[in-house]
Length: 574
Image (spheres, rainbow, N blue to C red):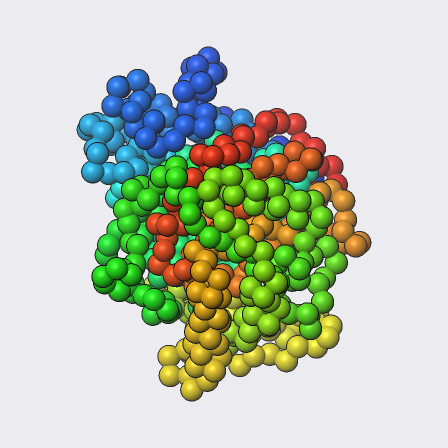
């Protein structure tokens, strides 16, 4: 039986259910007896992949027992935090039993590891909501007929797919409020936002609902939520992992990577998701810059565990982007920061503390007001992709959509209503006018568009060159900065008379130039909410990047798990 929690509560459709009341837990969820669940807690809470597989090798637990233990965590707490949309009970238990019928397989790096998948990534036989109620309409559900490439690779590596995590509609929000499933709460204080759009996955992973999970990132959607939830989030070099089978928000900027509680698990998962030394499937033409070269500057395509060394930070040089340290929004001084978007004083203090920790671990950190100043942020704005939104959506539907609708127009014909402009670029003529008015952007196919170089390729290469030149000029290995400009906001309290739109970051420039970045737990604010440090590197230096994150993690050991609650704390949250 597949337990689809979407069928249990229609938060988006019933305003009176918008308070954070518990979601009913199905009576037949196959959880362990309470005494056995409690005994296993000591072994499994916060466990990493190598230690779990050691337990399997000793035959202390079966994969089915571990899978049911994680289901027990979901059953107990998911009603409050709403991290998991769908539990694939039948599929997960079938996989677990099949693995138990054999022996632990060292050739499968995620053998017996329970994972969760973000709701915009195709999982065969499950509803791919993309966070939006329109893909879950009765009789018209978006049921994937095959796995996304990264999901297929996780399965092939022995992972147990537990289910699908919550996300905001189309991944287009800095908070995690979904019309398909409601609001995900921060595991460290359910009143606060976990950030978006991978807020469901980070909440599930930090809460020990799964060992690890997948996220996607178009502007900050792996990294910013990872920072709010004391987990590791990896944004690979664009082209290292495939986005085939992942619903696009902006397909020219979209990326996918792992979310884990520690760098070791993140490195193992990235090995699997990237496919090792084989090219991304399908090949990713968006990759620019250094590329997959040979010789001394060859791309770091894995395996990644050998890069994880405790002294990896010694002798390395990092800088802090001037436009971030100045507190700007990342879009130039000509675009003033919206209220609450600039770097907050408590975030600046946490960043400076993290810089001291990097220095103590042997790194040098340069603060120079000429390092990527505001002019760089303005150049980033010249990379425009809006004209190709419909092209990306049609490409995804044509390959992974259900038979009923293999294009945006086919969906609209079947349902009798328009897809939102968020994923088509085509405004709804019945939508209220914007202030100030924004003329629609004509939608074209990227291939053959005479303006493609002007819109996308040339400004992207220019900005990437500016980035690498800045690193060269100051002899830097990478950059460090906060994963978000502020602590997570309290979503029970309106901000400027409006609902919270989540914590904000100015890290979308990383996606626009396609370089890799990682977020690692870097402590806690006085409020008890997590702070994350982000590190970025040159293109294709993903191994070095994970090594630096590991060295920082081992030197500081700043992650601590949340203390979860079983009673809702959100009478006013929506």
